Image 1 (spheres, rainbow over the protein chains, first blue to last red):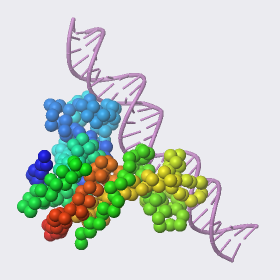
Image 2: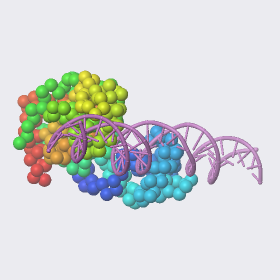
Image 3: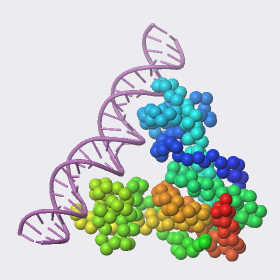
Image 4: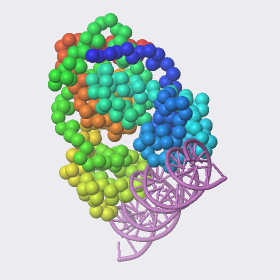
Length: 161
Length: 161
DNA sequence: TTACTTTGTTAGACATGTCTAATTTATGTG
DNA sequence: CACATAAATTAGACATGTCTAACAAAGTAA
């Protein structure tokens, strides 16, 4: 089933890279944000296991992010994103989500693969290109001219080979 | 003008990552291959200036690539890709070209941006996803059902805002 | 309170990839 | 040929991000 309900507000708020984070640091911020969504309190241990790194790597990363003002963090305590950190997380996660949905819903890339690829590509795609992806999705979604049908044909074509 | 003459043999020969190269090493191989296309002989200096790094970085990279059997290289001499190196270069360049064309011709991303993004993303996209992109392009290109018209509409839509 | 367990930090090693400075090799011109 | 210049290498510093091992703090339970 092809779902194309993608255009809820995607076209706003993809603002620039004010913070110049490395790929790795973006992953930390993104992960912390995801953990904040599903845990009462985020701990070093949680981040480590989510990112499949060891705790000392997390400690070190938190030092960097704290210095940049993206996390609030006292030793041996809980980890929290600052308001700025949340902003960054928001952008990163949006990029990730859009990319993944595009891969799945437009390019017919299978779920696991779409997740893996969007994880890796999300760090290397420009604001500009993301915006065009958003427009593409909106275009297909909104236009009453049969684009969805063609997309469905494409998905069938991919499945059947 | 939207050109979609993309489907010349793209669907073959996107073979796997037998060589496990880092992003950086992939860039070296790709660049050497491009330089071989337009220079009689490739030198450290050429690679350095193409990649905007200093010569010692190139020296060091060539050591790594030689050890992996991807370049033929004697000190103070010319640089040449081995047959294996050419194979890798072929894959990397194909990935790059497909990605770039997709960004330009489907997503209506402007030339410079498409080049920049494909440079960065080419290292992080799976074989699987590349194949779906190829299929998508072929689908649009081949199908007699008006997909191209819709794509043209989309491009106009992007341009006009 | 004391001992045990879990969690986290510090110290230090290692890998990758970059750079600058110094030296060496190759090239070209008189 | 000899010397000046260009090209390349080596040595070593540095940044990032990872890891292991050892130690320290916090939490738990008797």
